[in-house]
Amino acid sequence: MSEPGIIDLHGHIVLEGSMGTAGWCGPTIGSHPDGTPFFQVGNYRLDGVAYRGSLFIETDLRLAAMDEQGIAVQALSPNPLTYLHFIDVPLAVDFCQAHNDDLAATVRRHPNRFVGLAALPMQDIGEACRELRRAVGSLGLLGGYIGTDFGRFLDDPAMDELYSTCVELDVPLFMHPTQSGIDGPLRDPRVRRWDLDLVLEYSFEEVLAVSTLVFGGVTERFPTLDICISHGGGFTSMAMGKLRKLAERRKAAPEWIHEPGAFDRALGRLWFDCHVTGSREFEFALAQLGTERLVFGTNFGGWDKGTGPDVTALRTSLNANAIRLTRLERRAPSIAAAFA
Image (tube, rainbow, N blue to C red):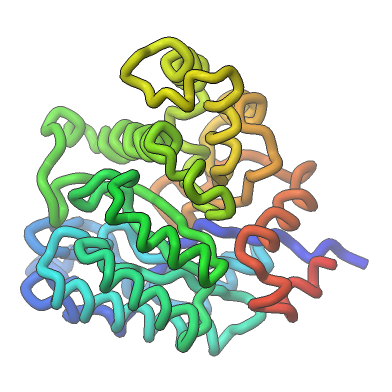
């Protein structure tokens, strides 16, 4: 009997049903007079990317590519360019509802190949909670999917409403950065040179998210909350030793984390996907993070496609972790049964 393949929890999608639903911000798919395609979100334009006719929109192309790569099931999530976390609340709500409706329809057409993660309007936490409840309860999506920067700290007390909602619904929350300057302020113009933001800004945002969730006590206040950070947590593996010492020695760190082992306990409650480029980098990440809360992810079809690690030896444990994180045995039993 052949192996059932692998579960990929890092696959972004662009949905026709969400185009033009955010008012002035689009999103818009178009082409220049010379035929060069572009994708525009607000004042940010991505030139040379043809989403139509690609696996980002065309489901048959995605399924064929998944088959080629041995991916049995994929979690579909919002394109990071379309988080729209800084636009006016009514526009963000309209966009997220349209996006999640179309996403759920895609999942329903292929219930044994796709599961979905919901876009949330993070500029209003109450609205984000309402949309998460609708997406999970009415649409059958498996959790929330948000950026790491939306104008408030991840440990802001206002965020507790969203974290409590995830715990109540028993669903995971995925965090994945995007470039600054799309619909929010540009962090640093230096990282826009040579597209360095795609590496440096993402990896910085990921380790900052991890640090904020840990030092800010989120994983202590919500020990049963499952948050998954993309790309192995960015620079987290390299910074872990210094972050641990900072936790133990610096007065600025909260008192509870000074206790030896407290930092590792708090960090150990987070999840990570394994889309880490380079075999040596991945081996180092494994040594630092372990495999207990590691899931498979590809950034499917993205600019860095095909650069992820060889996880053949870890496939069984990664699939088991994915089923545990997304509660597939309860929410998609037919999918979970295929990996039993």
